[in-house]
Image 1 (cartoon, rainbow, N blue to C red):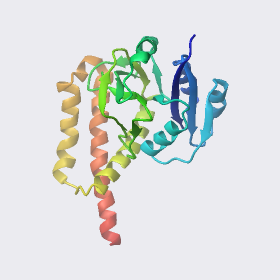
Image 2 (cartoon, helix red, strand yellow):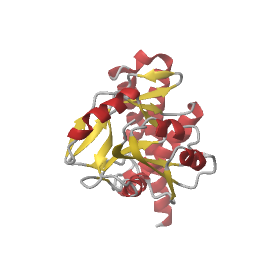
Image 3 (cartoon, helix red, strand yellow):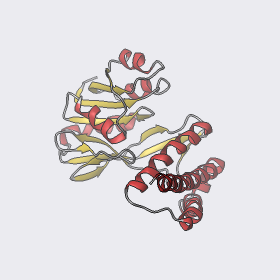
Length: 254
């Protein structure tokens, strides 16, 4: 296969179950960079066996970590994937076909399809879930956000074929992830000067469930769709409850 001057860039922490699939999904790139946060499993070993250049770097937060990883790429054009993502064969072919015509000022959005609870999820706000994953690092870069990080670009262009995402290993992994992300979300709200609101604590989780399950047709994904909608509402509840906790502790110590 002809290699293209594109760098595949991935950040990792204990991703031995996913990293090989992620790297193997882009056989057309001529450079693979893995920035690992000192995994205790076989992530680094597997990544090296797949031809990746591996860097060990202390965790900086999502935006800064991905920015550091992109800075290690040999090529201006970067495909930045999470370890639990993989290019579909169709998306790989689409990238190869349009590579010569890519706009360096643009960031390219991939429609992301996620697999959870034994099926590909097509509703509830989970699909197409466009993610900016292809960009020219000489013109664009990740911002410094610790959560909901994004690449700052002049313009965005949507691609047609799917990026595949194995979002959670199981329900326990979903609970752990929601806990971690709700903590980051609460910290962001507090840093932005948002005050805790009993009204939001009571209403936001319910409205999120209704949005995901009814307005965004999560019911069409069966029981997994219901579980996902409940999880989304619970994550919002945790975010606001943790905001209350942060501000309560601050009041006691000030």
